[in-house]
Length: 336
Ligand code: UDP
Ligand code: MG
Image 1 (tube, protein in one colour):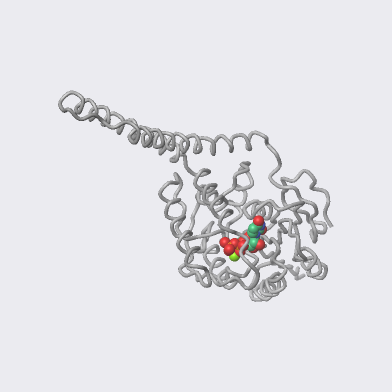
Image 2: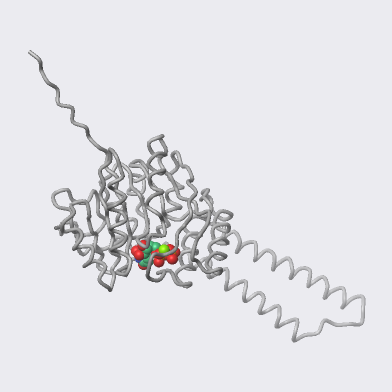
């Protein structure tokens, strides 16, 4: 008797995590592009996790209409705007995939590059991060500030964080598990991925122009992000405060010798008001900067010590029976 064997091929699952904040102008196109891209994937199942970071426009509504007739689309709806890095974190937490691709909603990161990321992943790499060789449609100011930020960060950070790479990357299940085990509130995801280690490789790509809509990172938010990145990955600013203090003390000693010399060996006296004011302002500035640097660290200790959940999910949509792999939100049961 010939016993037939049923070979069931089990495909791996790839999760896309797409943070969205007020992206109604672009979101339809993004869903279409990603769905089109999924058709090209062989031997891979896909889930598209859109994290709606408390949008005030129709983003969530539009996503829901897509999710209603595509079981691969899932929506994590935040109760308010928690910020890009937290949205990415929630997506990584919820992903059920064997690998996760982080990609922006504005189509600046071309989905087509993911083909090469998957190839590298299959070769055994755990992290394939996109490195921007060119950035189209960005202002000269943004280009210059981004460039300096990445260079400053690499200099200051205790962990080697790759130059010119954002969050567009593929990460394997191993790294996903590590990120899930990291409880900190101050999340600089690309730095955390570098910190995790494993086999990481860069993939050069050209960053496209935003498809539509405006950047959600105005200068103030960008500066905050830069400070977050530096402070959460380095204690060097504290050492810099000490160095500034030492330099001031050194200058003061020189001043003392200079004043003594004039007083003892010449008939000239150091003039009072100007020298005094400059010294007071200088020392005052250095002290305030040092206290400010200290404050940045203490503020973070304060926030961490409150131990609040990282994000609050108002609803999980499109999850059906599967459910999110993990959630840090207190209300994990509301899913549809
Ligand atoms: N984003 C978000 N929450 C925010 C700000 C931005 O989820 O508070 C998303 C946004 O929808 C986009 C991605 O993060 O998908 C990157 O933002 P953006 O394109 O505005 O940044 P830029 O590319 O200009 O640096
Ligand atoms: Mg963008």
